[in-house]
Image (cartoon, rainbow, N blue to C red; front, side, top):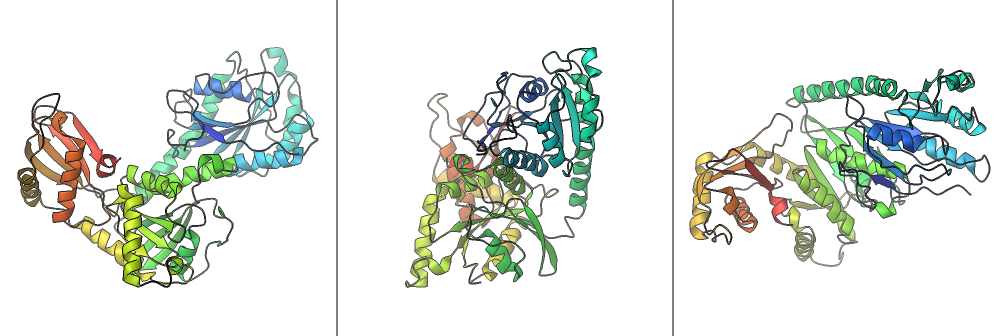
Amino acid sequence: MATPLWNCCCIPLDGEVVRGETINFLDTSMPTIAIVGRPNVGKSALFNRLAQRRIAIVHDQPGVTRDRIAAPCVATEHPCTIIDTGGIGATLDDGFADQVTIEADIAMETADAILFVVDARDGLTPIDEALAQKLRRAKPPVHLVLNKADHTEQELMVGDFAKLGFGAGLPVSAAHGRGISELTELIDSIVGPLLEREAEEKKEAEEIITRDGLKIAIVGKPNAGKSSLINAILKDERTIVSEIAGTTRDAIDIPYEYAGERHTLIDTAGLRPRQKMDTSVEVFSAQRTEKSIRRADICLLVVDLAAGISAMDRKIAQLIKEERKPCLIILNKWDLYHPGGNRKDRLEEAEEQIRTDLFFLAYAPFAAVSAKEGQHISQIFSQISKIREAARNPVTTGRLNKLLQDAFTIKPPGQHKKYKKRVKLLYATAVVNDKYTAIPVPQFILFVNDKRLMHEHYEQYLANRIREKHHIPGIPVVFSIRSRNKSKSGQRSEGDLME
């Protein structure tokens, strides 16, 4: 029987191993380098050397690393993420072929480059050859690393590894630091061009943002109906639709023309709780879903209305809120939600449910649809148009100051318990940066006598007043509170206030 895949761990910047959490600590937009090899070749020692902290467990017993561990690579000049994968088996028996396939597929599908680590002291083994056969079909470049080459004499014994098809290999000693500088130079030569290409693509995207339409991320838990929704929008079965949760593994960009504009629909993998993720591929799919949320102009949060709002729905909504993204909630499977009831009553009940369970996304309007039946799909772009139009018409400075001064008069702030003073509003303005997104989120800058006097609940009150007097559906309210005599500013978003 093949060794089961264990959950992947994430290393935050302080080096603590965190299990059972979504990978939010690492910058998932960075290039990824996977370290692959059979057990006991020193993958974890090499990982620790590149991360420059003792994270992975190092032991001479084969198979110690069961979890897959990710951390920022500190030893290189260019930023990247390194992944320490588990050993693939000590022998060719007991389902080894399955282990090779799983291990190699994970690296081949998710990494930008692969470090294939072998043991220079043990020489070439059948496991190395089996793994090399799989890795030769990999799209990412594979670089052979000959670990445990502690002495010059051992470098003379590594000629056999050339038959693996990845060149002579780079001799290193993770334990003693020998050859590590050459390895980091190799990684930099890989990562540098990737970062340059990403920067060029970002620049090109900025240049065409005025000509192209919106980047629309379709997000939600597995089997909520994301792919069905895209098919209903396209009126074509362009994406795989299945009753099996998690059919979509990766983020898929799909062009779609509407009202003369070229939009991009981003079909993402469904997010599940970490403890329910079956493979490391699914973990990286979750990473890419989070990246899709960040690069989107607007997020469509698809929920299964018939099944009700789940904890994972709230988790995904939290990601959207934290990224301060415009949002439209799609209440899918409307045809199965109290089908015999009055439409008005059904809508009121559905709205009460989502406003209670997703209270921190109170700014997001909703559309009740049935993707499978193609019902009310036209509401989606109608709502998106309203959100986009609201973003194009920010509140003027004069109106904002009048609005907020009235709010202070109607409900004056309370005295701060510690400082024994009240916050006073001196001036307010709204700043919009539309350089990087087609639906810009304004930042409301409030100049006050002392930002320390501003209570979060009072900021929430001000956010509600802005919404009452200035209609901005789907757009989060983001405050920047600045003291009159201090240069530092404190930033909190509307969603943060509602925690």
